[in-house]
Length: 291
Image 1 (tube, rainbow, N blue to C red):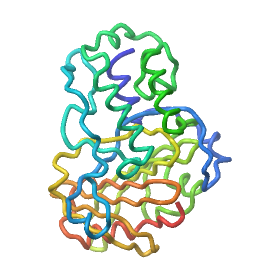
Image 2: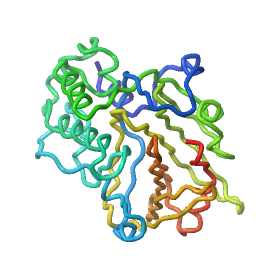
Image 3: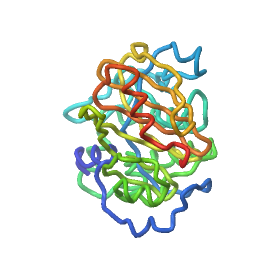
């Protein structure tokens, strides 16, 4: 299997469309079923100030450092999620089982096959453990066994039923949460989804963002390097829909987090907004109460 193919899988941006499998997905569900996909999408960085106001901060999302690794990132090695600083999960705060499980999986792959020899041996052939494990970037049976063990340890399941879906389709499945925002993305049978969108302010300014909903009770391996998490201004804000969120304003990136009963929401604004009011307006454009 080629490196580019694995990077595409791990980014969760490339797959086949099968919306027919989504028709019977309830808009809210607690039961989660196994399948797979791992990867990278959103991530955020906030400052310490929110801890006093909101009780949470982006620092709680940071994946704690694992052992040092000599992995070759380019020219033979594979992507290493812990190669840099400021890598966070999108599954929940502090020591939630979802965040802790994701962190444990990231530590495992940080120290596994550090020279890339096993991945190179796979080449263009089929992955031994099967497609669902390959989507978690697990290309050997040992990696698949480790993934299953972590999921069992924390009482979690794996993803199932990955399909691409527009925001119109996502709204049909989960409620009209996106308002005027429209874009393209994907979803799983368990209710986890992500989409890329664009929001237009009244003065004509537009911002691009990524919106991710990670269901609780699922092992989800999405994260991103965000740099120094102490450089973000952060505060609590109660949105128009009545849901409190954590907002983080940075020079190059802005973030929105909502910790709901059944899921954890992360919105990653791809270019930084310059004022708190702008970020609050973007947060108000979503109806988190239906999720």
